[in-house]
Length: 227
Length: 400
Ligand SMILES: Nc1ncnc2c1ncn2[C@@H]1O[C@H](COP(=O)(O)OP(=O)(O)OP(=O)(O)O)[C@@H](O)[C@H]1O
Ligand SMILES: [Mg+2]
Image (cartoon, rainbow over all chains, first blue to last red; front, side, top):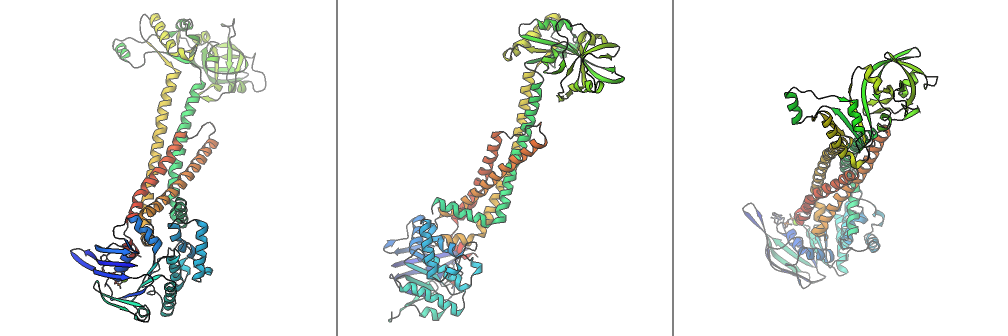
């Protein structure tokens, strides 16, 4: 469960104030599939970063699973990121010198999970995303789709309740993008909350709830009755 | 993140930036190695000098005419007094002091030695039988002025000279001519080689009376005195000065040098040299530390996106700081270890090339070299590591 109340985020560029988020109220229930669309600079990434605890709101409050996040310590927030949130980025953000398996293992290492258990979970993740053959390849040796699959495997290896994807298909061609989307949708089907930022109307329309943003405001919030 | 995981992860990072890591480790290693090699050289030189100087005698005091630079000598020269010579009578006086075990008067000159159709100029020492034990010289054969023969015309030949003049025959018992006098060869010195710049293999030793006659002098060049034991060196020195003052009509016109004092001075000077050389070498370690800092800062810049990602997947600032810190520790450890090996290898090679030089790095220098390497490496990484830890996750992720 995600609840934002009167959240604002303002950036200052010189003497100019940019209201990236303008008094946002938003409630997303557990297990929802939400897409966020809007023109460039409308605040989509900023919203996602705040939900993902990478950024803090200037004012307003944020509750995640009935817990007020806004005034938790840095360490506590890192713990929540580790355990409850999985990020997927447009540019994959894999570490180039690590193999696919090692990239996937990172969140487990950060959580202090024992090596034997890590191996089991990395193995399962590789299998789930059909990457077993590529386990020992570095990102440079993988295709775009494979890279994003590694990134998704990494985002899900801790079994977080929320997956945040910021234009996950932005660097992929249409068909591969659709495949990646269906992987994410599979996660949603197994109960994970899925929030996807996208510029692609067609992909956005696949979500059961579509949020439109403009100038730091939510101007549309539509739910599919079919869901 | 657990400590073993932090260490292992950073170790892998170090390995994957192979060239970068190699260069840092090399810089560190050369710094440590130069501390070790240079201090080994310098301490080896110290030990060499000390050994050489110790080998010339035990509990040795050297009496020489003239007052060493003090106000007294200045006054003396102003008043037109010349220091009185040391005489054989003075030497005998010293022999009666209770602190003195034995003494050897000494005169030095040069003369032509001829025998067996050969002729050459040699350095001549005039002394008594005690010279040989006091100066730690060894006789290969024969003896010199044993009791009861103090006034006989005996001569001891240095090893090389004996070999030159009597290559095939026994030197002992041969008659030789030195200057205008005939001598009977009574002993041959064992080869000793160079010691304190003085080659005992190419000298001859004759009784002091003959030397004084030959060089037409009544004064002595030196008197060598051996104190009864180590604790009596200082009191022997005082007693000698007092005795000579009395015999020289109350004039303080002799100088006594104790081997101990000279040794201590050499030791102090050369020890200071070792310290200075070690310190200079340690500067290269600090340079290596600055290199580590620079490289770590570059690494933080290069890996900004990676740091952002680590934060996004749940790394705390502490995790990030430790990762970068551990990287620097690995580099410094490897550098210090390699440097230690290189340094030991280097000083080993020096010992191999110059066997007389005991080129062992003192323990303090090795420990300090390694310590300084670790400390500078670690200190230099503090700032880059905390800079990495403070990076804003969103901005860091935005960087490519
Ligand atoms: N670190 C920052 N410093 C200054 N301004 C920022 C910063 N991050 C975002 N902004 C500004 O905030 C506004 C919202 O940015 P945001 O990245 O959320 O937009 P977006 O909707 O994700 O755009 P896009 O579709 O191009 O990714 C923009 O005007 C952007 O310039
Ligand atoms: Mg964006």
